[in-house]
Structure formats: structure tokens, C-alpha cells
Image 1 (spheres, rainbow, N blue to C red):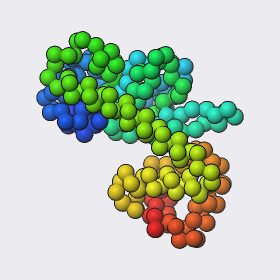
Image 2: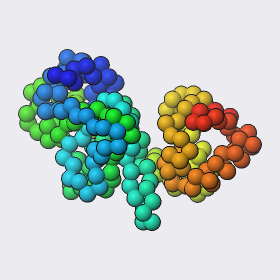
Image 3: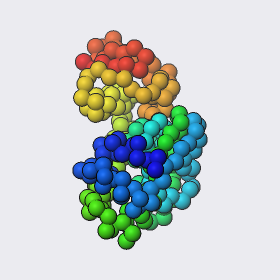
Image 4: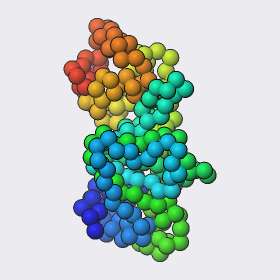
Length: 221
């Protein structure tokens, strides 16, 4: 089973938190998990798709995107190893995706049918109770992640959006110096602001002593 090579990484994910590698291996069979591969630029989910499974990124990077009323593309979330995909959609009543999920480089996923977790087939597997609790917690935490994301987008000024995002990254990494996984165009898209406005404000913030940067490496003061 090709997924066995990823079990040590899965131990650190929210879904399998607190489970032993042996329990995870058996649970993957019980919930009918699948190992999927996608090429660079390929769509994992398209807006309008019905989504009945969720996934965990095993390797690679991608993004969740949605068009606004003017047709501009907004990045809703960035995906990397350990990120979850589609759990809120699969758990919803309609299960219709409002977003598109696309790879930015080759991606490998662990795909899990939600019915495989909630149905009867896995209930007798070792570690199932922990898996179920983790799944419920993961759904709640994804909702909170989305709340934080909306909080950044709703900041009234370009400067506040930049600071909100950079402080969020610094908090996650635990350092005031860090790299972000976005170039200037990607950062402008992620913050839903004009690229030239972003560049101007970054220069002003550097002049004002709030931060320093070189390409995608930032230090907050």
C-alpha cells in the first residue's frame, strides 16, 4: 500500500492526532482511503462539483480559489503538506463546491470518503473513536481558519491586510523572520489588492520601520 510511506507524516495531521502508526495504517483500510496524484496546474475540485470525500495533502502545494462579483480570482487558502481539502464541503448538506482547488506543483493526496469515517464499516477498527473525535474537531477548526481568513480580507486598508497576514504567518512559524510561499503577484491575489498598491505600501512600511523584506523573506519589527 503506497500510503504506508506517508504514515509518519499523517501522525502530525489534525485528523490522525493521538493515533499510533499501526492504528493509522489499519484505519486507512477501514475508511477506504485512496492515494491520488495530480499534475502541476491540475484541478482537484472545480466550482460546482459535488464533493463527498475530503483529502489531506501528502506532498506538493496548491491553492483554493474563488471568483468575486467582478470575476477576479481570490485565493481563499494556500495548501501544503498536511493541509485538508474539502472537509467543510463534504460535511455540508448540499455537498456542492463554491470553490476551485488547483495544484501549483505535482500533488499527492490521501482521499477519504466522509461516509467511510461516519459509516458503520470503520467503527470496529482500533482508534476509530479518536479518529471520529478528530474529524469533528477538524471540521470546527477549519471553520475557525476560514473566520481568520475572512478577518484578513475585511481589513479596511492595504497596510492592515498586509500586517494581518504577516503577523498570522509569524505566529504560525513562531518567528518574526520568515518566508512566505507567495511572490508579489500571489500575495496581491491572496490579499485581494492591486499589485502596484501592494508594492507601494510595502515600501512605505519598510520606510516606517515596520518591517524589512527581500523577495519573499520578511522580518517584522
